[in-house]
Every structure is written in C-alpha cells, then in structure tokens.
Length: 182
Image (tube, rainbow, N blue to C red; front, side, top):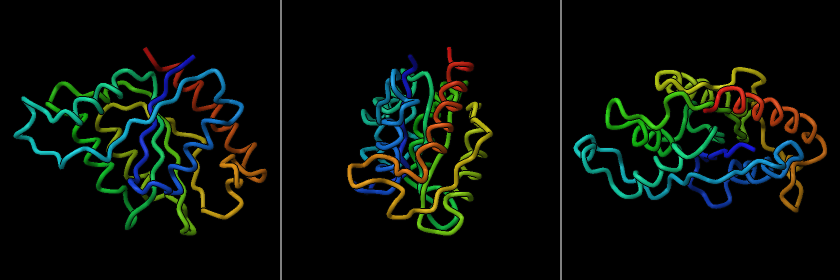
C-alpha cells in the first residue's frame, strides 16, 4: 500500500482539478492505497530570506511531501503554464538548497481544463520544473483532459466515458510509485 500526496494546483474550492483528484482516488485501482492532500493555499510567497527559518505552513507542506511514497500533481493550466501558487509550493519544498523534499520522489501529472488542449502546456512546464528537482515523473501515458459535464457524475465519480481510461492510468501510476519509492 502506497501513500500518495496529492498536490492540486488550484486554490478554488470547487475547482475542476480538485474535483478530478477526489474522483480519481475513488477509482478501483486506487483502492488499498492511502491518499492525502498536501495543501498549498496557506503558503506565503517564497522568500529566500526565510530559508533558515521557514514559515510553519512551508514546513508542514514539506513534511507532507517527505512522508509520501509518491506524488500526484493535479493542475489546471493558466496562461499556457502552471499556476503561480503551484510554482510557489514547489519552490518552498525545494529549499533550502541541498535539502529538497522532492528529490527522488516518483510522481504523476494529470489535469483538466475547459480548453481544447486540456493542460498539455502546463504539464510540459511542470515536467521541466520537476526534472530539475530530480522528481521521477511518469512519462506515459499522459492525460490531457478537456472538461465536460459528463467527465464526473453528480456524485463526484469519474463518468462512464472516462472511467476505464483513468483507472488504467491509475494502475500505471501506482505501479510507477511502487517501482521507484523508497
């Protein structure tokens, strides 16, 4: 059983990506694993002057990342890139230099957006950032979801049309985590 920290790149309470994350952890493939949200909303803007005495919210976030076997990034795309709040969280956890909480962690990236290309550009930018931090990001399969009202059911489950696809992705992701964690 793996422990997965979920990092949602949106602060909006009912964001499509938070809803997707909640639905994905209820997929059959996810059963038997533990998922927890590593929240980023309370993090102040990163300031290198705080490296010797990080804010409490940053310490808590970093501990959540360190305690996890793997990471699931679920992010929207803002202006063809990752949201600033997500980059801020990544910066906090990578510091101080030489003490990154990201090093060697296996990760997967998904996201949903109303745009035709889903979150393709944001995911590519996030992959570049994570590669520089030695995060072992699963390469394939990639998921670029376009939001539609039938993506999730009224009960918050993955809809019939996407269920098998997302469940297969979750199987691959959890196998990636098991292969590379510890």
